[in-house]
Image (cartoon, rainbow over all chains, first blue to last red; front, side, top):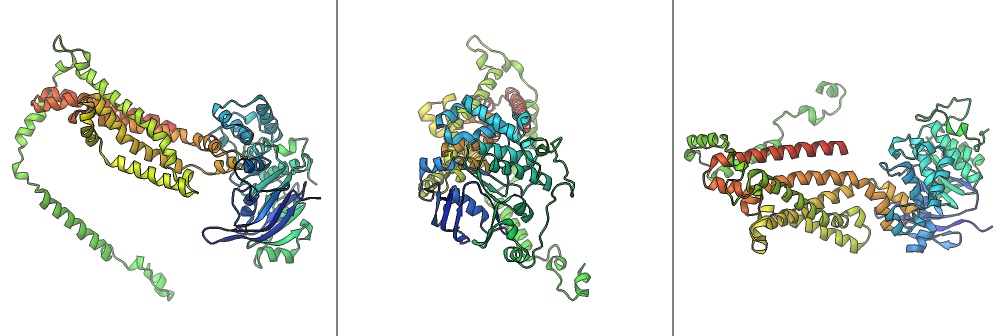
Amino acid sequence: MAALVSIRELTKTYPTGTRALDGVSLDFHKGEFVVLIGLSGSGKSTLLRCINRLVDPTSGTVTFDGIDVTRAKGAELRRIRRRIGMIFQQFNLVRRSSVFTNVLAGRLGYRTTWRTIAGRPSRDDVALAFENLGRVGIVEKAFGRADALSGGQQQRVGIARALMQRPELMLADEPVASLDPATSHSVMKYLEEINKKDGITVICSLHFLSLARRYGTRVIALKAGKVAFDGRPAEIDDRRFKEIYGEDAVEVEIGLGPQAPVPVEAGDSVDAAALDPRIPPDR
Amino acid sequence: MAEYFTARGMPVPRELTRGPLSDWRRNVTVILTMAVLAIGFKILDIDLSRSNPNYMGQVLLQLVQFDWSVMTPQSEFETFWDTAGGLMIVTIFLGIMGTAFALVVALPLSFLGARNIMAGNPITNGIYVAVRLLFTIIRSIDVLIVCLIVLPLFGLGNASGVFALAFHNVGVMGKLYSEAIEGIDAGPAEAMTATGANRFQVIWAAIVPQLVNPFISFTIYRLDTNVRLANVIGLVGGGGIGVALFQNIQLLRYHTAGTFILLIVITVAAMDFISAQVRKRLV
């Protein structure tokens, strides 16, 4: 099967001289839930951003669905980008705009500039926005300001915004690094759902190996810009862990399920994931 | 404190040993400041022996013995617009119109003068440098000087005053707006670029919403300042209440001048108060 994303000899050197990626070659296949792990500065964010060209690689190629992303320019690049959703550690919402406006922004790539200025979304876009807000369980907050939401809720708005693109690939850059453990699982479950139900390929960078093991179908470890491990989550044993994170590292568990009671996210009366029948209980 | 370090055989940090005046840099600063002030006295020939406190006292006394006749038309040739109240209203509108014209020019230019918008390409970066330089040059020419320069073009009166205010404020407001643009959160812009939005859509949907409040706040602040400036612009022939004030002082009509000054003080204080209240609510 042809790969959805194919990366060949990708290298990125920043103007400061930092070599963030050093000859990375990887293939990502449709339907995978790939988790990128590695220390801070190992190149995870740069790798993700090279895929949708938020960062221009120094050399090497990235192809998405057979199109060379590294050569694409202007309108062609924007057409590629709108097929690739992205969520961010800091959520990157327009804080003082409404949740609804933020979600609609996911549709910008499909709208003309004129329509953006005129400001009237099409009926289909509005319907899609409410559908996606419903999927992440925040319809009732649609017309509140984005910064009035809790961190977990803001990240769910981020997911809804990315879903507006009807993406084939979802890039997630440390989506739960600013969130507490319970909220982290709630957000990760939404990513798992769009991966399993919608068949959207997910490439997600994470700090916690326990989250990587729980959600990933494949784990890739980066170390100093190179691929240090590529395989199934279960294959990461103690020896591999120390290779990736260094001799001094100790694995930290992030609480999962009933054995470690999960606190309810602030701002949510109940854990949204527990209520949502579309999300199967994990375990 | 020093014993803590000596008892442990460690070097004593300099912060602990240095007395308040032992630092030579401090002494040099003090000596230099005194020298500058001494030179200033010498060059400016500040000589208090010629002062006349008695006369000043008489003038001050006349200033506060307000002559209210200027509040009503004094002859059949005068209308409301020749009274102090009318002139005050004219002056306020000088400030408003000057701000409005400056806004129209400064607003679009400020985007070209924002580093985060223009960076990344030598041509746009060149435009950024040129626009910022333009703002600095315009700003360095004071309102009164601009007014004197354009008197031959517009003649004595309101037109010169409005032009002078507008011209100088393009530089001031342009700089304020540009810095507001540079201070925004870049996250939403990155997120919208990732959705496939074009450059203009990114500015419109991710940057402009963050600018509404700072722009309104800066504009009100400048409006307040410009009404204040409009009072003195009359001194050089720019129209408004300043003309009448200047004439009355030259004719030694201190009773009337005092009334004008009182009116100006009330207006400026009110503008200041209103502007502070509105801006406080915008944050």
